[in-house]
Length: 153
Image (cartoon, rainbow, N blue to C red):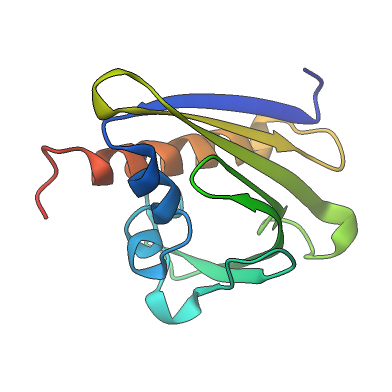
C-alpha cells in the first residue's frame, strides 16, 4: 500500500445482503454514515443505486453544526458482493481532482456473518491529520453496531 490508500476489514454479525443494503438505503445511512460526533440528516441523502448514479450527503458536526457535503458516482454495483464509487472528501474542495475511489467487498463468513473489506484510493497522499482512515473506520464501526443482533431496533 502507498500513502494514497488504505484498507479496513470488519466482520459484521449480519448476512451480507443486509450489510450490502445498508450502503444504499438512506434510512440506514442516517444511522451510521459519518464518524462519531457527526450526523447525516435524512433530507441531505440522495442515493441512485445504478452505474453512473450519484449519491450526495452532508455530514453535520454535532458540536458546532458545521457542514461537510460529500458526493460521488457509483462505478460498479454487484449485489450483494461489491460496490465501487467515487468519494468526494468533504474536507476538500469537491472537484474531481480530489475524488477518491472506494471499493467495498462483502464476503459471506461462517454463521451468517459478513467480512466487509473497505479500500480507499485517494488522488494524492493521505496523512493522519487528513482523518479519512479514522473517519471511515468509525463509520464502519457504527455500521457493524447497527446491524448487530444485540442492537436495539
